[in-house]
Length: 313
Image 1 (cartoon, rainbow, N blue to C red):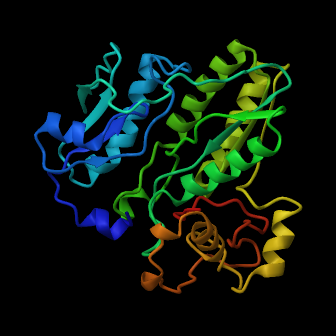
Image 2: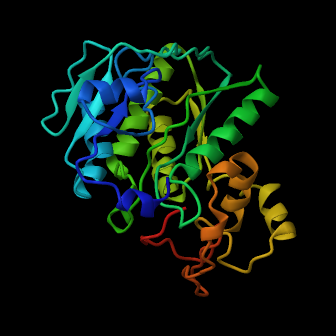
Image 3: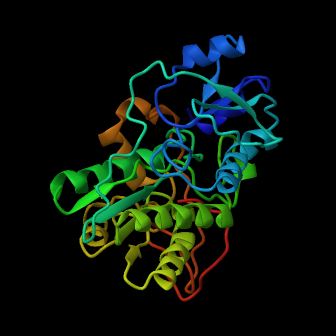
């Protein structure tokens, strides 16, 4: 869905966050006695039984943050679907305990061995103009991570892509989620602690969403400070390295700003990966990103300043 479509949804429509794969929308709707439901992107790990659990208090913070967006937009029926005995004990959401109808691998099959890189792709659920779906960042970074693991399966493995990140401008666009910087950082730090305990010692946190990047910088610094034997790294978005950045300049058709959020690059990725989700008849050509000698935003931010600004990526 695009953000204008979310804005038009009835406010009594149930919003359901599944903890893991395997819950059918029809099953959830039947339990809630609803004609239809909005099933949010799956949270694949962090919960009891996922094989990579965080503390109950941390999981509660994550769930409350995810469902806090729809709540702020006026949606009144908010649920978490799971099949564990764990009680979230959150006063803000209702819990639905269901048996998974669809066969799914719920426990993460990770080797987590030393000197094997664990890719941690971080996407997001947020507006991408009038023509791209809310899960654009998640789709793109998921494809990149899977491609990397397929290319070097003996050297790398990956966690399921995290579909929730940080958007400072959440209230401006329907359907845009926001974990908040501290929840995002604390959640990933607990995940990394669990991976280190299992034997992993090399991590690459890759992001499909610009709003995540500064917080990922903090995560890799914190985990490196706690575990001196661990190597953790991140970077500014995908397609920004020594190969990606020159390729963008070679093939781009838009001027500065055209590669920004929901612009030429993300649209090209989505037309390649999921053309069925692109509404090209609804494209609006507007480039209004900040551009000064000291700061500009295109695909790679440039200039001497680091800003706190209400823009996504």
